[in-house]
Image (tube, rainbow, N blue to C red; front, side, top):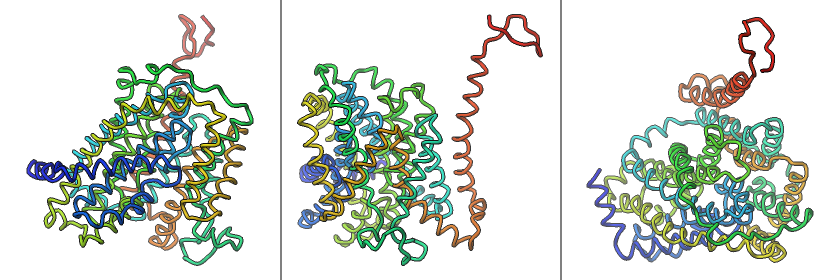
Length: 509
């Protein structure tokens, strides 16, 4: 392994490769700042620019765009509650609340630090465990993925802590919206399209995300009256040592969770980020502050996001199966350069494989150096009066929506879901379960159809898989344990009478 690591550094640390890695992370950050683009679109758009480069150099640049866009999406999530891409949605929940309290700089800084630590951890695991983890990932067939989707939906429902009923209702609403389009079981049956060809492929997540978060927030702020710009001093926007200390357990947990989910083909960074947030909300000592500006609520999903992005390359390189949408585009880049990802790639192209893997570390170092000092500077945007900010947010949101598919239908969707987002805020309905259920909906339905086909209509086939049973048991634990802990806490806090015997009424001291 040490020889492979040294080989990777020799390849990745050439002046040409470092330069293109820097260009990649810089372009990725800019792409992530634009709502609607995201890493997948960014890599696809810039892929032709790499045709004149050596394959390893081209892939290093494209990978830099991938994780650079992750951080760019975080910046807009924190500052203006507008996720640059799906994986940044969860960061909005606490990051934007931190920004409203004058702590945007700390939120952006902990995101950069968490992403860097996650990159180191995931790179070490990637180098050590890529081949065996690829074999394990192969065991996750539709039955196992169906169990994973159930686990994901349970975590989505419980995102709001005590508001389980509202969380469940909004998750169901998200699943219903996800059913629009062609039924995956037949490939021809239309559902809720009303004859509109634009809806045949379903309601795009990006437009919903921009509308609910960005436009919904702007409409709500206009209704209640624009808040005063943040008056925090520059030094208040710089991250403190206590913030890093408090966030470290969340970063470590998020890195592990992100890597585990990133290895699964098709799971992607979005699933990893909200899984990490949901679990962190249960185990954190600061759980009461989640959703109100908890720094752990930023550190955990951002670490998971980055770890999953790196782990996505396990099935991509070792099996030739894309770990997510962006790695699917990168898989196409491999084909263009005449490369065949799979188990033999590690033996036939060791310089390319290990040079690419080590470049993740170098790219994240560049991101840290580039963005950590700039975090307080980005946060200064919040000093701008909101009367000037709102038109900018609206303009970038609508341009981002139009750029997704280059038609006005996307813009109308943003406007419609902007009104939906505004209504949710007025009625105090949780937005996160709705949006995240919309993400999981197609994945859940696909796994459900495939599992039903495998069991010939009997979903009980799930209980024949030890892996699926283990995942469902974890889901049950996540539902039951908080209730048990709540009952035990109430029992401990119940006042007792000194000298009272069992069976006697207890009085107040």
